[in-house]
Image 1: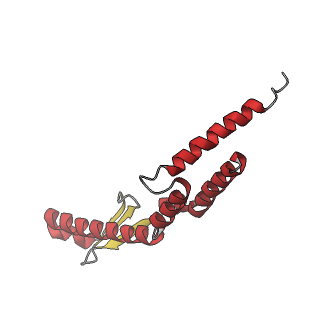
Image 2 (image 1 turned 180 degrees about the vertical axis):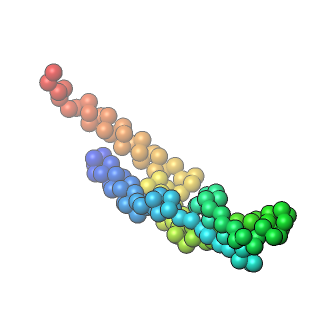
Image 3 (image 1 turned 90 degrees about the vertical axis):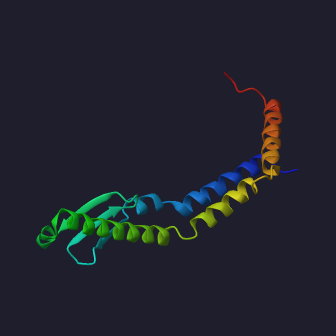
Length: 139
């Protein structure tokens, strides 16, 4: 029979390990951006990690394209910037889902495998019985 205290310590250790692996990732992704220029070089767009446009630069010559032409090159630069941001996101998070998934599988078992839940319920029950045997704390 596993000591409930050591089981919870092991669980806490695994969770802390997962947190350590991914600490800083949120800040890293918050700083991520993608910048790209359209094929003509007249428009440069910058987007954040979510693809939100954060910067747009038009060369004076872009205005000679007319409203439809400007719209076209802006959309092209924007699309390229989003693609650049997506590529960076994929590079920075490569393997993250597999690592996180493995860590969670270690903790809770595979989907549909309820043995981890049974083990947790058994541990909580043991702690309850153990708590019932401890003397009351002084008031």
